[in-house]
Length: 261
Image (tube, rainbow, N blue to C red; front, side, top):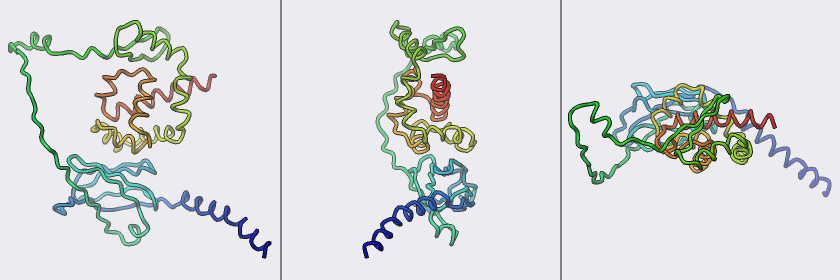
């Protein structure tokens, strides 16, 4: 009896490993479905669909249909202007029966009072352009011999010191950020190579899609960019594609510096 119990106990880890391996080796197939408006049940055209696991993107056609590579248990991320974003887990039944419909819900916006402050325009373009407010918060610093420049946010001496500190000891600044997130960082190149995902990110400014793709929190993204000496102005105003390219550029520099140490 004791021997039988020991055999059963020894098999438990093997069964668990086999289950994990099966999940990881799920066959990737073409998955087709239709996206509709939850209120009207009309098909939605040009909805962005991203497979967060396979890092592939597509958009729906005029009939609301899309096809994307997917495996069972993959998560699909749906994004459409004026509608709530939605995540859907792919199941065996979706492949088996087909005709899957994904319903998106419209967002309800509460309009707030907006105060318009008029500028004293003269009607002469050259004069009016000079009178418009200019964002003076973002400055680029570069050093001869380096192929990159650094944003520091101002012309103050402390800003220059911050840049020099990043250049002289950048790997130490970034190791804690990038070193703990190797899986997320490996996705960067895959994301950049998919045109549909890039088009989606270029139209986004809320970091929501980016956080889902990279499995990072917004605060992590800000920490990375701050330590890479991007200005607060850039972090607040850049679209998600610009943020992605900035993180990717910073990560590539980190890998080179870390390799040389």
